[in-house]
Length: 557
Ligand code: NOJ
Image: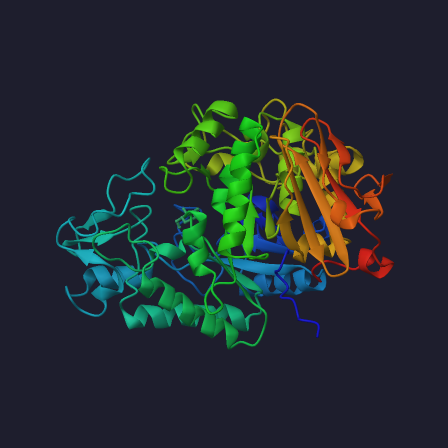
């Protein structure tokens, strides 16, 4: 029996900020009109799905994660019709669309909040948010955005009470104890499901419910509500991804990945471990992290980002051990002047000090490990950032398309642009852009495309089982990805020094081996099979014969 795979298993997810991606109407702000025209580029690149950061009406004090209307499109991006046209086109290109949905809170400008603050204390309307007469409740819940807030409570003059906010003070937490709130959120899901979206990235899932005495994260009531969400999604009868954002250690993030809860969750612990591995040139902690993730939830349910629209979250020792944070801040990037709340506020390329070898290596690992690789817009070019902009804006600047005015992002005059395009040395949009890199065979962009093309022909990489192979080299990691009809061996050198080693392939003694990325034959498998990897080098080998049909089949479509 052939089991039907869900579209998202092993899918490559491309995250983009619609406001910063492509401006179709010349007002200086990216929109659906512009984005729709860029779908052919995304198809060319070879990604499977786009994840759009929030597209709803919002005062944009937190990049749209402060919503005022869950059932509409921000007027600067377009309207429900332009969204519909975008979605239809994306589907024609074979690209799935994931919406970012914020469940935990709204903007203070949301009509629900405005109604709540004027409603009598204790009334159902007031009860849509979490209120208190003092700030003593939920004391053990850490303040997440410590650069901007020093408490999770904010006094509201109109209400004459404090309201609870796990994030910024203008983002009051919804009160999920209130059945009306739950109904509204389920109704929002129905609304977008009916419009045909393929998935939701659920923002900040651990924080929905509160309770005294702990961090207010991942309470049983929160899991129960996520199960209701899953039921609602199942009832639409389509294969819709629920991808949870939980910035928690892998064993905690794994608790959301149940048969009746979320399909996928981000593995932020892996993100930190990948940077630490390159910082220290050592495989040990990375091995442990990969093993922990697979022990917790085997298969391809982890979403794996290197960077996203937030800082590189390292946390207070809760997400990853202090030692991992130190490896990054001493061996890779000290973060001086770039530290935001709990991490380093930089894009991938500058975070790696512009080292293209390390950049390719980390991306190659994402493309090889079990899970959903997440690529942040512009990182496929090695785009830079704009230190000095407010909050996380340094990482959210316009996509660089061409060497023309504003990097081809918009025809508007400079002062109207959503954010300034990058012109810093080494990252200037006149050099680092899609048009230029398409024409350079050795560019990072062409490298990504090549990797994705190759990956598509190797379904073992997107769907296969995962097995770490024991080796004695401290800087190299070697693993197998296998499906019934294909075995792919992966080796990656985490250090700047070259590495030579023997791998025990006696299980397949005498089988043909060939490197697939560069297309060369290796000696047949044996018990001490020799490989050499240059500085930050990596390779994919096929072991044994593979039916041609398998080599040509697409991995996720
Ligand atoms: C997580 C999002 O990734 C981040 O950008 C946002 O500020 C917070 N949730 C609050 O919604």
